Length: 367
Ligand code: PMP
Image 1 (cartoon, rainbow, N blue to C red):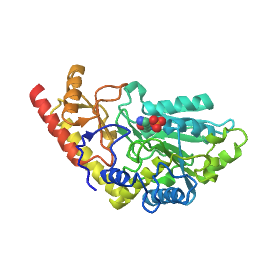
Image 2: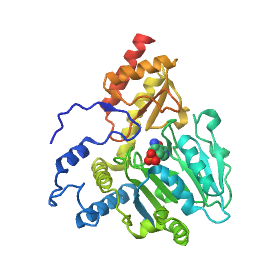
Image 3: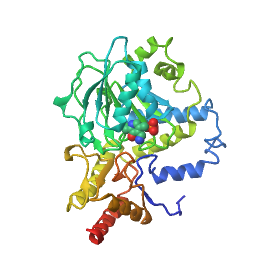
Image 4: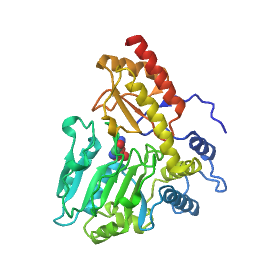
């Protein structure tokens, strides 16, 4: 089936553009899943059909990211923001310390939430520089024997992204990968826990993926009597993410996105495409000085590309006119202003080319 409806180029940071073949499959099968005769919106989560969808989604995630056997993949709700609480609730130990690397607004939110729950310490922060860069390895003040180190692999609002993981020794690394999960290969084995809300690269809003190492799950097992049941990773792991009703539609859609990723070369191919798309846009940003990238060059994100113009007035015009030209969602996050182009996996090359052409024309008429 082909979609005849006119689609704009969607630069939104999330929920974000989904692969068109995935939307078409959802559209085609929404009334009745083939062989099931009921909509994904209607089937019981305890049905064989949904169990198969969940199992396939999990096995495709495992295949895509080479998730080692000693990690569990969980499908949870409450968004990445709920993980800001669940991580410390489950992983902090009595008298222990958790280190937080604060390199963006979401990282700071995670830190603040952890501080409510226990002894969270800032290992480094670049807040005083408006989070325009990531802390250098030598700036990290890590606590020996910490319960874990928390980082945010891609700072969605400020447009910075780690190119290499920080060395945290044997301390478990916990990463909020909400805005770059599966945009490039990921070395799961170097993490203790990874979490990501689905609504950027993975699918629609409503499901949060958590990948957690078995030895860390043991901490949750020991907290069974004290933690609220729904906040305990071990409960979700033991029940195969079916302790309660999972977000069935969101899981199904994530499953289709995983199938699309596998059919399109997996994570190495995504990285190559994302590098190609981002390079085109950064080249235009850097071409004359009319546009100004806000992230330091060595930590520029491939996913969220942030830039500014000389005045806020000009920025307002840019957003208004680009929206009218079918380039949607370029307004930067309300906390930082400027512009932000989110180029997730499903964002097409043609959209980048359209934006670059728009930028050239905008500069020609206003520069
Ligand atoms: N972390 C990061 C890096 C994000 O980009 C976001 C959402 N934009 C969040 C956390 C919060 O996610 P949610 O809205 O799913 O709670």
